[in-house]
Image 1 (cartoon, protein in one colour):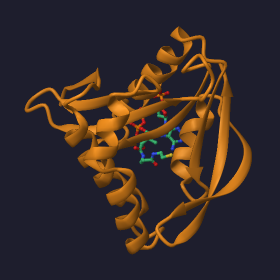
Image 2: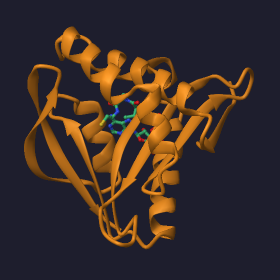
Image 3: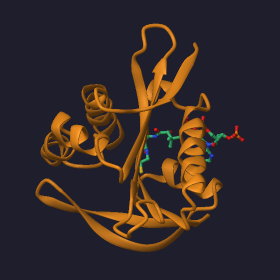
Image 4: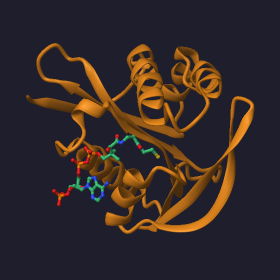
Length: 170
Ligand SMILES: CC(C)(COP(=O)(O)OP(=O)(O)OC[C@H]1O[C@@H](n2cnc3c(N)ncnc32)[C@H](O)[C@@H]1OP(=O)(O)O)[C@@H](O)C(=O)NCCC(=O)NCCS
């Protein structure tokens, strides 16, 4: 199967919200409480929240779609920090693929795109947060040189979940 990766823009918010919500459920069902997941995706990954993000100069998102039918199977979202230069530091806020499309090199394509965008903006370091139980993703990030620098709680719904903060100097 062939896939296309492209940068998202205004108009993509419904597709990104849908793939964002679906991949959260797929990744964390059985790890987190269902009610926390429902609350998290309906607030943090709504069409409206992506509409705002995609219009912002401090956010950049990419989507992977099937070549046939142009259906979203994964996405990445990079957020710039608060400084005067929007991307002097950046957080890889999300990198998710539907389970059926893991292991096909698509995560690498999304990661390479986010890294090359950050380098083009002279970003000094990229950080991310990953659930401490998500060993698969942690191992994937370590391959790129990300190192765990701290551990902190992440609020989703009514509970705190433990996340590792990982960082990569660029
Ligand atoms: C983590 C994730 C993005 C990886 O994407 P993927 O498409 O499955 O990975 P790829 O096929 O692009 O693999 C790229 C490379 O990393 C390697 N790799 C993939 N997963 C790995 C893992 N868990 N541990 C070590 N290496 C891994 C591959 O072997 C490949 O190596 P190569 O370039 O030498 O061939 C994907 O599995 C995913 O969406 N997981 C669920 C969502 C998630 O947990 N996201 C992170 C939330 S913070």
